[in-house]
Amino acid sequence: MNSNRRYILALDQGTTSSRAVLVNKQGTLSAASQQEFKQIYPQPGWVEHDPVEIWTSQYEVARNVIKNNGFDANAIAGIGITNQRETTVVWDRSTGRPLYNAIVWQDRRTSEFCDELKQRGLAETIRQKTGLLIDAYFSASKLKWILDKVPDARALAEKGKLAFGTIDTWLIWNLTGGKVHVTDATNASRTMLFNIHSRTWDDALLDIFNVPRSVLPEVKGNSEIYAETAPGVFESALPICGSAGDQQAALFGQMCIKTGMIKNTYGTGCFMIMNTGTAPVLSRNNLLTTLAWVIGTEAVYALEGSIFIGGAVVQWLRDGLHFIKESKEVEKLASAAEDNGGVYLVPAFTGLGAPHWDPYARGTILGITRGTTRSHIARAALESIAYQSKDVLDAMTADSQIPAKELRVDGGASINRLLMQFQADILGIKVVRPVILETTAIGAGFLAGLAVGFWESLDEIELLRQKDKEFLPNPDKDLVKTWLDNWKKAVNRSKNWSR
Image 1 (cartoon, rainbow, N blue to C red):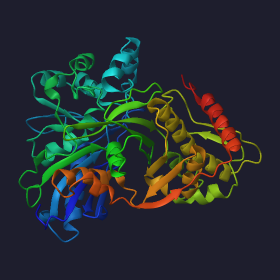
Image 2 (cartoon, one colour):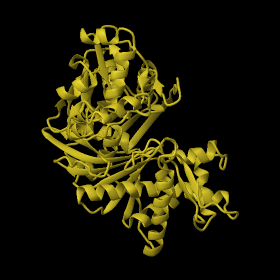
Image 3 (cartoon, rainbow, N blue to C red):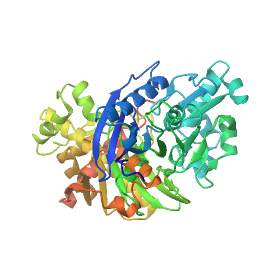
Image 4 (cartoon, rainbow, N blue to C red):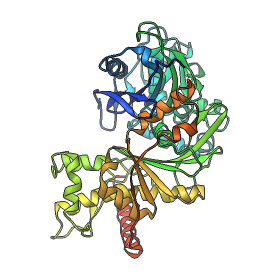
């Protein structure tokens, strides 16, 4: 590798913003640029993005992070991509124009169709092939909606004139000037059209969702050279050489490379993933089985639990209840109470995710008395994040039969010391926070760097990981049992509320 190539450019295309970061040889971030983009809500339960704005914002921050640091593309060894998963884009192959807005992973417009699939008895067939539960969360029903509802879309698709992709595919298409239509194995595994055992698009699934094979991208590994950027995109052609969905990228960025290792990302929601090794483990407890990554000929699988409302409960305290002016103030407010005062908050604002999967659950606050204060409610809100994570971890250990030894954490809410200590106490294992919390972008950088020899091996990368703090459990077991029993009662009372 050319010694002048000092960085990997990692593109981190998220749900609310596009980021670009430069990852250096030491595995730390040398620079970053970020730009938010518009959220579109055409109807209740519908969430869309403008695909053109996603591309232009991502391209702009990529150019900015290079230019603003006083050098050109010759300093870049390769490009890694990580992205919001499941979000669905369909575009015209000849013009590159999207037929419709991107339908975001949060969108619920296809819920009724998903209910029909369950009623047809297809849940087990789909789970066995994909590792997924039937839900509007995933890409297949969104793609079907576009093909059915957008004028002429299905006819154009049948003629081979349309391309489908998740956001990684859309970015690579644009970076290569429309020459390359690929996705990576992790993003493919979130579409509900991909067989995670054969690692191919599945004809039976394509029939269920009425999706023509011609719209699908080619599936690649997570660490290999897919293509070079088109002339004029940057000052010189750069290899695009790594890609993974955001949560898998975070798992890799945390170096959870051994079977049984677990990470939890505390963002707007929480996403916990356990590395289960080279054989997929199908969940009996409503978790998802997914590909963690494919490097060379080896595929690594994972169990995943998605929590819909994590850090978003703090945003609600800030914007909805006006308890705080800034999110970082929540720790001080919550710490003003010695405990939760018997208050339990279940943040089922959009239903409950794993392991409950109840779209009809709604937010609930229980145990309020005349002595309840804002601090008690704030503490209960923070604790709800930890309780939900405990529910998912219990399901993971039951499915995998692997005892959890530690939980590696990242994401914005992991800076909250009160939350992390409470998490350690109720899990009964240590919680480990790294120096660099942006493990999603770092993971994409690591995958790309491996492909071009920027780093020679996983062993070399593993040595780069630095711990910031370990939170050791110090629980009163009887007290923890009481807390967990009360939490379970509160969750049960929130379920099925809006049906």
